[in-house]
Structures are given as C-alpha cells and as structure tokens.
Image (cartoon, rainbow over the protein chains, first blue to last red):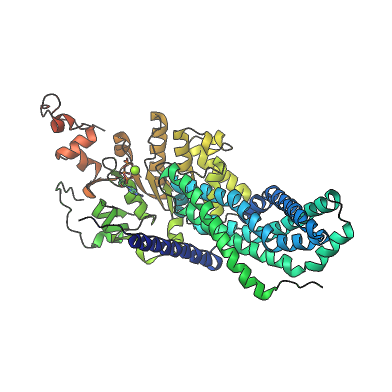
Length: 268
Length: 285
Ligand SMILES: Nc1ncnc2c1ncn2[C@@H]1O[C@H](COP(=O)(O)OP(=O)(O)OP(=O)(O)O)[C@@H](O)[C@H]1O
Ligand SMILES: [Mg+2]
C-alpha cells in the first residue's frame, strides 16, 4: 500500500533534507579546517583568485554601489523635501550604505558573479574527472580549489564593500549637491556627524561573513556535482539561490548581533 | 596462476607465501553503485615488476577496479593492500604518499583544461616540489617526446584530438617516474603505429626501471605484446588469471570468444542460423 504523503510527511522530509545538507556543508567546513592545519598553502593560486574575485568584481560592485546610493538619495530627497529636512540626507544615506545596502547588494552581486563561476568551474572539473585526477596525484581538492578561493574571498569581500560604500556616497553627493542643489557643507556635515568608522567596520565585517557563505555554498555545490552538463547547470543555479537566500537570512541575524558591538551612533 | 573457468567466485585464497613479492593485494573487494553490484568479492594480486593486463567486457568494472587500487574509490567490503599498507586505514590526506608512488592514466585522460599541455605534464613535478624550472621543462619535454607530442607542448588540451589527449595523459602519468603505473586503456583511439610506440614504452619502462604496470586494454594485439600476466574481469570477479600462453591455450569458450572477438549474438538471439561450432584459431602472436 502506497504511503499517503500528508503535509506533515513533506515537512519532515524537507527538514531531513535540510539537516543532511547542513551536515554536508559542515563536512566541507571541517575539511577546510583540516586544510588550514594539514594542507599545503598555495599562495600563487590564492593571488590568482584574489585577482579574479576581488579585482575582477570591482566594476559590478562599484556600479551597484553607486546607483544604489544615487537612487536612495533621490527617493529620500523627494520625501524629506516635504518636511524640509533634505539637508540631512547625507547622514541617512551613509549609514544605510555602510550598514545594509552596500554589504547586502555587493554580496548578492558577488554571489551571482563569483559563486556561480565557482560552482560551474568546480562542477565541470568534477564531472570530467579532473578532481579525481588531482586526488590521484596526491593533491587534496579542498587545498587546491577551495582554500585559495576561500582566502581570496575573505580578503576581497570587505574591501569590495568599502569600495562600494565610497562610490555609493560619491553618487549620493553628486545627486544631492550637484543634482538637487543641497549645499556641500550640509551634506558632508551630516555624513561626518552620523557615520563613524564603526559603521564602515560593520559593513566590512558583514562582507567577511558573506564571503564565507558564498565560497562554502558554491564550492560545496561544485564538489557535489554529478550527472554531467545538467548537473553542472543545476549545481550553479543552486549555488546562487542557496547562497543568496542564506546571505539575506544571515544578514538579519548579523545585524542584530553586530549592533550589540557597534550600536547605532546617536549623532548630536 | 589459476585459470578458474568457473562462474562462481573462487574462495578467497589466504595471503600466501608468494605475497613476499606481491605489491598490491585485493581481497574480497565488493563495490556496488546503487543496486548495481559491480565488483563482487574480487581477489587479485599484482606482483612487483610485472606487467599485468586487465581485460574484460565493457562495463564490467575494470576502471572501477583500477580506481580502488589508488584509493579513488573505496570498497564496500574487502580490502586493498598497497605494499603492506591497508588503504582503508588511510584518510584522503594520508593517501598522498601512496598516490605519489603511482602514475595513473584516466580512461578519458582527465587533463586539466585550464592548463597547457606542458603545465599538465609538469603538474606532478611541481607537486613533488621540483624547484628548478629548467629541470621541469627538460623532463616535461622528454615525457612529451616519448609519446611523440614534442611539438605540442604549448597547446591547450581542448585543442587536442582524443588520441593526443590520451598521450598527454600518459606523459603526465610517467613524468615523475612512479613505481607503478596504472593505465586505463592507454592505446584506445590511437593509430596502429602510435599504439606500437606506447606498447614499446610500457615494456621499456618495465625493463629499464623495473616499473610495475597494470594495463587495461581491449586491444588483443597489445595484450600479447605487453603482458606478463593477464587477468580477465567478468561478473564482478577475476574470471581468469594466467600467462599469455595459458590464455591462448585455454579451451574455455567465453575466453576464446573474447580474445578472438567473436560475438555470441547468433547463438543468443537466434538471429540467422545457429553458427556451426567451428574452431577458432586463437591469435597466433
Ligand atoms: N560513479 C559511478 N556511479 C554509478 N555507476 C558507476 C560509477 N562508476 C562506474 N559505474 C558503473 O560501473 C560499471 C563498471 O564501470 P567501468 O567504468 O568500471 O567499466 P569498464 O569495465 O571500465 O568498461 P569499459 O571497458 O567500457 O571502460 C558500469 O556499469 C558503470 O555504469
Ligand atoms: Mg573503463
């Protein structure tokens, strides 16, 4: 007799799947810890990845940051003008950029650009037995493929976010000062008054964790790829979807946690 | 030597006195993928310095068997012993010293498609931390010349023909002078002349450096040219194990059909007339 699938079974099933998935991610994480202590560091590969991940993602991140800053400034201006408080825009925009907009949007863009590439590249190597070829020559795939990407990402993400913040602010300045004619002194005064180094650190620390999420999930999908070209496609899609969603969820809790250490500045 | 033309797996022989020169021992190895049982309690010894040729029908698990020897696959049951070390006791990282003694040619060559031919061949050397770049270049060139690809060092694997890729794979396997070479169909897809070159190379490696080789091949010409011993994998066990002479003189119909390349189609499916059981002259050298 066929089991009837009630909603409860489905729920149980997805819960088990989730636990299995997390376990598998945990295994990779422990392999990475192993690589840290027992593996051979691959400095050259790491620099290669820093160039590809960090240097190569700048355009995407800068454009995202700039236009987010610009549009956020414009929208805020339209509303604030009604209350006559448009001079405070700089403070609002810079805090929002530092704490949420730049880290989250840069994180999502890098997921799409870099996470997808990692999953596809490693996945293709898996299905064409190149990973087995590495292993056959005594090279641990985590040492060779994951760790360089991991370190590159942890170095690059905070810097990319800082860059995104800078360009977001610059765009905001252009829109407010040049576009809407808010005096530079007002704009800049509010930026400096409401933004501390802590706010920038807040964003960069988030970037650090987002980097870990992106590498872990994308490389995991790549290494677990089976079933040829279809599998590579599936793995790439999953990498982007899982990493983006995880990033957004983790972002919320990170905000709560980091606010304990870096409370929102009160201004004067 | 045990020509064992029985269909049931023979009982596992205990590790015998002859294991003194036995380099690799597989005992009762079982491996299944899902419900498909590929290896079903397989026993095999590989002796130091010999060239063992592994034959058997396509899809019977020859490649799977070879991957067990280097620990790329792990048996569901049974054990693989490499020069006195049980592979099951080693984790992925601890396998490194074992694997560094082995050269492995993948059936599909498995070249790194992001590296040039020369960098592919140099890979094992760089991993072995050969620091002198001149020495690396020289050894890479030598290895490429052995497989007659001296002029193609700068190409990318994607731009090579199938047979060329295979030969780059061979060069990569031999470049660091391993103690044992595992070739998965080294001459598949190669023309007769290059096939002969590769066969000669396999023999030369054995004579000159005393290298142990395991060669999977479907080319019966190659089998008799390179083999000291032949093992045939069928139905998940070693169905036959013996010298080329023993294989030739075997009267087992399955073996004879296999080495002469006769299909049993007419007998099996009843297409056409039942073929008269005429004698097969078995390939005379
Ligand atoms: N990773 C795997 N997952 C599932 N099945 C597999 C896997 N690897 C091998 N098999 C199955 O195991 C069987 C043996 O495969 P194997 O590649 O060893 O055959 P083979 O003897 O080398 O054949 P050929 O001479 O054609 O190369 C095949 O039926 C194959 O489908
Ligand atoms: Mg095969």
